[in-house]
Image (tube, rainbow, N blue to C red; front, side, top):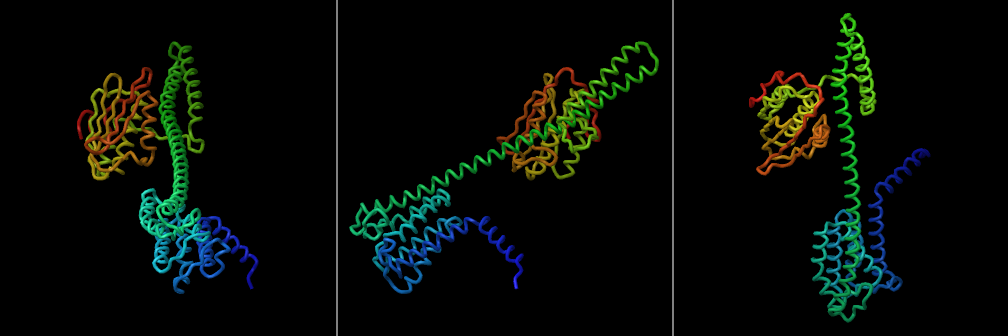
Length: 422
């Protein structure tokens, strides 16, 4: 004896089938309806559905509902095959009989097939389907066999051919228009999704930049606070001035932390690791070479003292660009050039690979969107795209603004000295 819970589970399974596979259910229903109409025209009372009686060999009459109804089940998954199968059955019938293809049974099958071909096949396949059956329409129309809905058909001739073809073309065009609208809606939805992803990437990158700036600003202001407090504690002159410096620095530290906390993800921990700089690009290049990508690194000698925020951003841009090359360019060689001209740091990362490192975002960042955000923070710009001779190039310019605190210099840490190619 079946438990009620088992029956309830079976009902839910049927519900999932009807909901998740609604298209299959609809297509099966159309196929069954077509087979039923053809069966009525073949074995029953065809006048009830406005069709002519279908005559022919008994084996053909037995198979005809299946030959004309079953293909409609494939109208979404294989529309061209469905269309050709229906017309193959019609050709077989016309070779063995001179039945008049008119009435609800034939119009339902052919109009549904024409619409499905236009709506679910690619445009090239849909056009090919019309071209393939055109000779059949011409022959049957001239013979006065293909009547469909809006012509008598017995007379045949050019007018019968044109009218039959126009009827099929009208339903085919309706399917094409529906398909075009469906594709446009899908494209709009995809564009909206990509826009949302871009906005999320920009927001996340801003938060990451805010975390890095928090480290730098908090560190330097903390040093100022400690030095001022130590000087005041030592009992040296100008105690009032040192006290003002300490109070101002403490207030700036609190306000800066409060401002940057708004941008930081609240679930992340407040303790952040020190950030790398240009002096560590040598070590970065060495690690990338160890991963299998030859890297040539050239750093301008004039980059001895950069603002710390610019220093970090240059490192991060080069790091993400090399990660892209390593992951997506295939067998390649990369060249990294860091220059300095007219108070602007220039970055160029090029490769000669065969892939496209701009298509995917590297781990730990948000790809090109993140690099552009870093450059935009300083009023700079970053461009990326394929090179004319092959490969990919990332080029950026980061202006150095007055008032930014300087970093610790450019002596490499575990890498090559600046200005020397690796």
